[in-house]
Length: 564
Ligand SMILES: Cc1cc2nc3c(=O)[nH]c(=O)nc-3n(C[C@H](O)[C@H](O)[C@H](O)COP(=O)(O)OP(=O)(O)OC[C@H]3O[C@@H](n4cnc5c(N)ncnc54)[C@H](O)[C@@H]3O)c2cc1C
Image 1: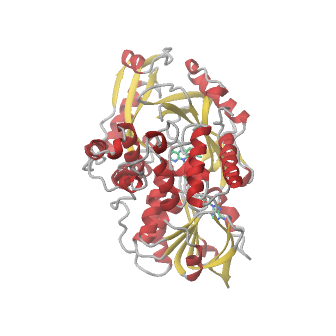
Image 2: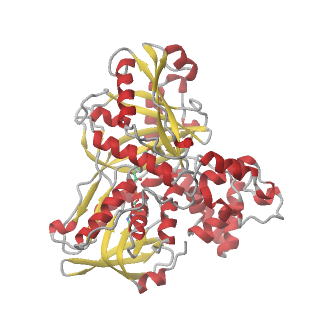
């Protein structure tokens, strides 16, 4: 994936996508797969905003039963299976336990009906060849079993538990990149660190964009027949760049946050525990009276989410404060007192902005938007511009398919058939995941150990040999690895040469899993910076600046453990 800005100015594209989050990446892939000439521009690094901060759950939508929203549930189930098929290395089934209490809405009886309906509604979920992706039926179990699976769980009123399966994305940043790599292989031009700063307009028609290269400050124009604005929380800021139009999407924002906790609260399972904070969803047919806190296994630690609050500021000023984190820790400790979490237990913070539809009047909690928006601005007389506001990482591919259908229709053309539900993403050419993994481990080159091979397969799938190309056989163990973190130097070089990594932060947080669950340590960062410096010709002062940027980003993710 090469960053060729000169090429961007030479062409007039059929479609230009603003924003390289998961929605932009899926739209670029969908468009190029259907034969369109496409460009995608991202003002920072690909996937660095909302998309890098999700709770990594690929939802099958059990909770939509509360809203009796079977359509949304079916969409989510279909997308979960689709992602397991096209990205088998990145998406894996995740067992989830829910302790049951009393005989009401959180009791065994209600949950057993919910599990039954979930299995029924998703009866085609295992129409996928790979047995590792099969999702078993849910089941209810006894109080004793629940206590042995979840030691320390509150026993007051405990009647047992419910087990069901969802899916987890092993590395959401790499899934975003994997869609982009396929888009680029199919002809799309993609570039990071290019910000859209204005629109080219002819009468009531958008004909392209004016951009600024954030790395050099250079400005230039790119022509396009249709522009898709998928800039996430910035959607209305970008619309504000259109001259002579007040067109906007209906978007207010909510701050959303997850915490990565250094010691796992539970092992092997994700667990849903009820928050003590009251919450009522006006759209729900059945109201539980509180939100569920989801504790998921993550890199040997626990990831806990999601906490929401109303956000009325500028998306550029968004940050998670220490008060936000402390308030969330208090909420978790009230819901599960044995956790007894303190600030020093937090290794990483995910924070992002999501669309909200309103505010719950009694509690002041944000009500999150449940449905994506696809806004064709021709409705207001502005041609050539469509905005898309997503609400879930899980359903981005499905929304992308609908966006490209709309683009063709706006040109008065019949959309060609979409193939994105069956075409593997970059690294997804795997028929049976377990067999593929076993073979990769058995054929490990250069004496790479099992754990490294496992990680390479989980991150790069069938494309892992492309990474190994950059591993020199004559290096000793210390030279091959970044400290003891099992990320190999070859991944850093691969990130720079093949995946457009421009900055140390890109490699640490998004091309490799080096910084995905906590501060990787000064030594690993220095080796990583030196490796990139040799590739990109960085001076000593630039290396220092890059290290400083990682340190700043680490602080905002709250993950620096002082070791200077
Ligand atoms: C804490 C949290 C937990 C979540 N958990 C889950 C979950 O478990 N499962 C799930 O399915 N979903 C989850 N979500 C929701 C999901 O992450 C989002 O719906 C999704 O990532 C939105 O993607 P996006 O591409 O629309 O936005 P973004 O990822 O924000 O992408 C928009 C991009 O546009 C770029 N941009 C903005 N302005 C410009 C410009 N002028 N020029 C060029 N580029 C520009 C930005 O830099 C940004 O990268 C969660 C979200 C959060 C915050």
